[in-house]
Image 1 (cartoon, rainbow, N blue to C red):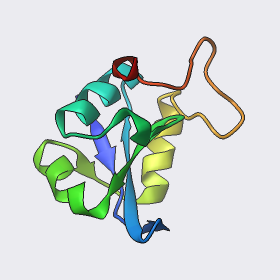
Image 2: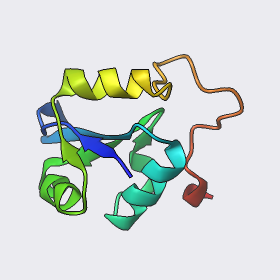
Image 3: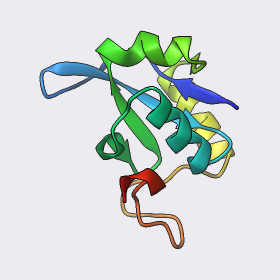
Image 4: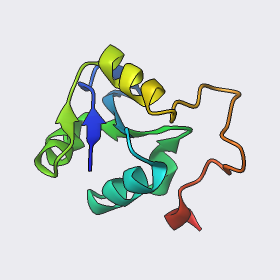
Length: 99
């Protein structure tokens, strides 16, 4: 299991946010996110948005801390990067536990 999280430096809705990704599979990502309490609505294309208040919880649960550029590089190298407007074939954009 390899999950990565970047520092909470992304502003939005009056908070700072991190991105949580897997370099193995979306299934692994969804399972980990559910285990740390991320709601399905926090999933966006290829990552979960994690508020700063939950960053330490994600790290304690096993997410590796890396920089934002390295996070994108690893996600892309794993073939899991889904830029806006380019969904994976057959991917509905929602984690399985959202149904």
